[in-house]
Image (cartoon, rainbow, N blue to C red):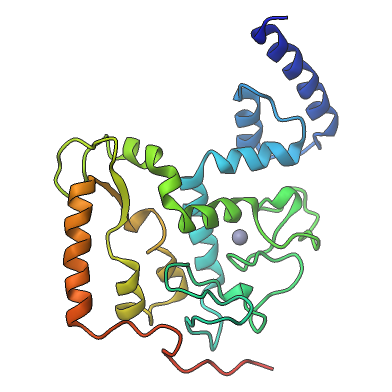
Length: 246
Ligand SMILES: [Zn+2]
């Protein structure tokens, strides 16, 4: 059997399975996406995973919009440390709803704080209320990965910049790198007191750019200079911990 025949047969079976498992109501963008894949996902859940995995920018935007809806929990401040839910370094985005004191419990997303519905979707299309077995939106998982490893999406980001270096305007080379316009050490040092949803913007698309390696090296050297001249960014000791409610 030729590869193309094998794939057609596989997709025919996968589509039959998907159709059997598909509920009456299913998010249209995820279904359109699933049917356009070269390998049809056989389960509704997989169709949604695949949709968000291939649309990290959309996921980033949505996760930040959902976070804005939740807002900063009362009494929360951005802290680093070894406690559950805290990041060990300022390189990771703050996630208040992962902290025990602020968690909203089953059926709520630990990334954005909003209710999670069937299939990890963010809208209750089914009118069935939050899915109490779920702890995150599929979109927020994709956003979380993107925030923590934006370099994985360098090709996508290059395309969005029409392959021009954001620093020099010249053509982007193969070795171009993803950079945070405002470096994360400065976010921690200078912007720590911003609202939490605003902070997330520093990990999302608004603060990302692809620049050529040489420009990146220069930028990092300049940043290291300011870093040395300024106060060393306090790490684990900064800020007094907020009083845990309850
Ligand atoms: Zn979420």
